[in-house]
Amino acid sequence: MFNIMCQMVLLFVLLGGISVPRVQQVSGMNIYTASEVEAVNGTDVKLKCIFNSSAPVSLQSVSVAWYFRPPHPGHEEAIFYYSGRPFPPSEGHFREHLVWSGDLEKKEASITLLQVSPAFNGTYSCRVLNPPDVHGINGEVNLRVVNKPGFNLPDWFLGLFGAGV
Figure (spheres, helix red, strand yellow):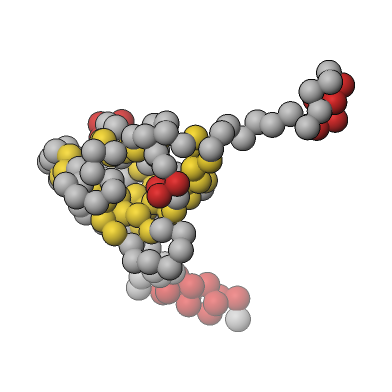
């Protein structure tokens, strides 16, 4: 009995052995952004977008697109495009308020918003394509424009020095 099992195993191995299905590695873009950024009204703010691609980065083939979606009901709009060179917006409230601040050789596809106002509140999406890596999850960052920095002293602390509110 043992001899027959050994012969069957030997025959199995000789005819192809244990077949392991091939797993094909499918690569995609990995895009990283902060989930939320706070900026003071009237200041400039950089929206960082870092990407990772399994394909070599070619300045001629990488393209970047940024989109904006307001917090209230509204449609998403394309606000910036990069393909070989930056294409800033030529109209709308982002015109003259958005500049390219990325460095594709460092895998950075960031933009800077200039002199932000509450109209800039919303969600910004960074999308990067580096063929053949064209699939992946887009980076999204929620921008909140405030009137003053987020650091406030507690009322009890101010009361210690006679500066109570």
